[in-house]
Image (cartoon, protein in one colour):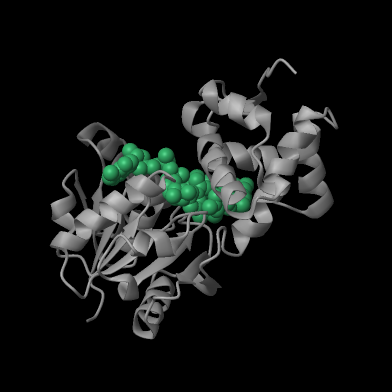
Length: 294
Ligand code: CAA
Ligand code: NAD
């Protein structure tokens, strides 16, 4: 069965981006959020991004309208039952993800492919909560989704060849470059990226250099587009904390252990850009380094 209709669960940082690229690629896209307030905020972020693209001359107002017409917001999980593929992008919590997929499994037709955008959880565990583990993959996109070219297509031991091929082709149809990954926690990119980001926090804790100089070091010394602490604020410190805990539980290696400073920042509500404060404070015109009392 050809993929025509895409479901996305969660319209946060990642779900909003995934819904946007799916609608831009011409798919009828249904995105589900927990309540109307969060949903409208998520849809407004997409609208704003597309309006900027119109202002920059990258798309016409008519093209923007066509993208928005492809996009339908809902708070009802049942509204996704006609979708040919459903991509889940809710918070990094295995119990929540299993509950959502188990519920969807009851209402979706047999041909619907289930995909998770998880950063660090085992896809097999989510697939096992359904009666369609052969039609279950990981589709791991990168932030910001409309800009980053990569999607990791994750095959579990139970994923059928047909499902994997369809998911891979679907990634290409979104304008992404897919790579094939096994279902190990962190897949390819986070297996390598997460220890680096956590080491940058440890460097702050140890007073190796200032937040700005650590960022400047990696930007100018390695040509990275963002320093690690700016990137952590961008990804979300809450999400990074969940990911570190999950990867540490999985591998029991100290390189994945969440540093105490990360834990304290999350407990204090310093989630990064999304909450207005992380390693940097975003309340003014330009980000300034936060006072972390170090
Ligand atoms: N959402 C959508 N588009 C965005 C954006 C956002 N948050 N931020 C920037 N952009 C777009 C801009 O509109 C601009 O588009 P055009 O070229 O069409 O005008 C383009 O990106 C470049 O933006 P800027 O010129 O403003 O800024 P920049 O050159 O510094 O690029 C960036 C911004 C693309 C975010 C770049 O800094 C970058 O690549 N940073 C690293 C991002 C990264 O490493 N992502 C992976 C995170 S890890 C992950 O996702 C996995 C996980 O599981 C945690
Ligand atoms: P986020 O906090 O920005 O968004 C999560 C959204 O899920 C929230 O808007 C929340 O209201 C919504 N949600 C919670 N329960 C829901 C439910 N039952 N139904 C519908 N929506 C629900 O988080 P995010 O950064 O978008 O991360 C989402 C997923 O993507 C996580 O699994 C994360 O690990 C993964 N991921 C994150 C990044 C990143 O850079 N932040 C990159 C790749 C993958």
